Structures are given as structure tokens and as C-alpha cells.
Length: 404
Image 1 (spheres, rainbow, N blue to C red):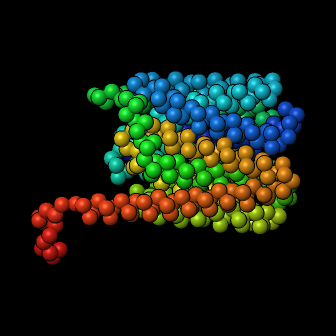
Image 2 (cartoon, helix red, strand yellow):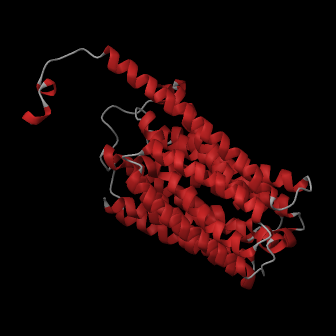
Image 3 (tube, rainbow, N blue to C red):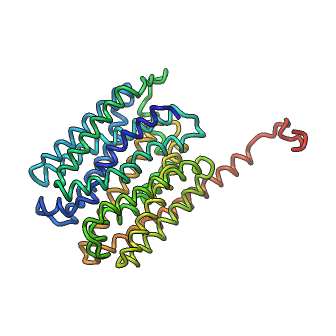
């Protein structure tokens, strides 16, 4: 695996910490900004909306620009967005800073994924994406709990300053270690790449990714109040449980990255099924602190076990448009990260309790599982059609196996 792929993974650590650290900071942000916890949860959705919009727009806008220059610009804007969040005087400014940071994060993910995929053979795509997603997993292991710890002891703004510092380190890594990636001889054309959206499998991949991610983060976004108000744990436990989720994510990413290249649909089916079962268990056992902590760890494993396969699937079905494939995957994940927290906040506002987002999340992942089944059926049908129309060419393949 090229060193540059690992540098991209390290950069994703800063991006992922900012994206997910609010799960452990909602109570202090809500108190400081004088808003409800569900409204504070919209800051998570704001970041996700920025990712959804920013990924395809920035991918299209930078399609003909040098890859390294684009990455440098985007990580710089992202870092400045963290500074703006740390200095935000009110909720509106904080909301806007999240959107700006998300736009830059989305562009970095889209371009970075395309760069990573371009540097490895087809058979190593899931592993390359696992390295990048590994940065996200480490963010959940270290960055998100550290943000919760800083928020509890030094105020939530200190977490934003810490991410700004991590972004500066990532900028140095990109400047010094990412090689110059030449543009293809035939310059990319947006109109030609947009053709991928006519493919049913591409649209199904978007749907599967959005539902799988949305179901998990519907519950995860409100984990802090679930742990304290339902499971009865002290607020000091939140950062530790978030770290446990991150450890599970790291384990899941490693296993999924190793298996997905050879058994892509097997990973999708087993991973999303596991997430559905775990979310139902969280909803049923939320009052038990031991069960909730264990299930949080298992949810991290199942969610990130599936992630490399979701990324690789999109590049497989949209290989003719690698930049937009990366952007589309990023947008799909964040459609889920937008809809999930919104749905979770909606059921909480309906006075259904802090355990209700787990039920809503399980419904989303169940729909995602159905979409995987449809995609698999279409894949098998197409394979049979291609095989039935293939011309018969007598060659070594027609010889007895024992002769080879």
C-alpha cells in the first residue's frame, strides 16, 4: 500500500474527529447556546448536509485541477472552519461554520478517495478504502473521546481548537508526502462522468449506503443522553464509551477491509443485518448500563465492518467516473448522517424517549438490507444474461481440469 494512502488516512483522522465529536458535546453546547439537545443535534445534520452538497459540487468544480493542490486547499479551509467554530458567538455562526467545514471535508474525501483508488490495483480497492476509513475509526477511538473529555474539563470550544491543530498537522503531511498526481491524458469531462447516474446499480448503492449509515448514526448521535438519562451512567463515562465504539470501528474496518474484496455482498448482508439486530437490542436493553456499553462496542464493529464494502461497491459500479464515484459515496454516507440524526431528533421531540432513535435506526438498516438484496438479484441476473450471450471459443478453458 503506497505511503500516500496512509497519509490520506491520517488526514481523515482530523476530518472524522470534527464530524463525529459532537455526539459527546451536545449537552454542553446546548446549555451554552441556550438551545434544546435535539436542536443542538442539528449541528450534526448541518455538517452532513454540507458533505452531501459539497462532495459532488467540489468534485465537479475541481475535476480538471491538480489533485495535490486541491487537497491542500481543502484541508486549509477545513482548519479555518474549526477556528470559526471555536470562536462562534452564537448558534447561527456555529451552524454556518459547520456547513463550511463540511464542504471542505466533503471535497477532501471525494478527491482523496479518487487518489487512493488510482494508486492501487482493482483487487486492493477495499483495502485502500479501509486505510482511509481507518483514519475515521482512529478518530472514533481517540479523537471523539478526547473531544468529549476536553468538552467536560475545558469547555466544548477547546475540542474545536484541538481539531484545528490536527488539521494543521494534516496539512503538513499532505504538502510533504502526497505525490503529484498527473491528470489523465484525456481531460475529464463532467458530462461524460454524469452518465453513471443512469445506472440502477449506482442509485442502489447510494440508497444502501445512506440507509446503512443513517440507521447507525440515528442512534449514535444521541448516545450521550442515552447513556446518562436512560442507562444511568455518570457523564464521565461518555468519553470512555465513545472510545469503545471507536475501538469496535477500528476492528470492524480491519476485518471488513480484508474480506470485502473477495466477498463484497457477503460483507454487506452480514454487516447490515448485524447492525439491525444490535440497534433493536439497544432499544430493548437501554436501561441496562452494561448491555448498552457492550452493544455500543458491537455497533462500532458492525457499522465499520460494512464501510469498506460500501465504498468499494460504488467504485466497482461507477468505475468510469472515479472522481464522481468518490463524491457520490461521500454524499451517500452523509445523506444517512443527515437523515439519521434528524429522524432521531424527531422521535425524541415526539416524547418517545432517548431509546427511540435506536428503533428508528433499526428500521433504516432493515430497508438498507432489502436494497442490498435487490442489488444482488440484479447483479446475478446481469451475470446470467452476459454468460448466455457470450460466444463460445474453444480454447484451454474447454480442456479437462486435470490437464492443467
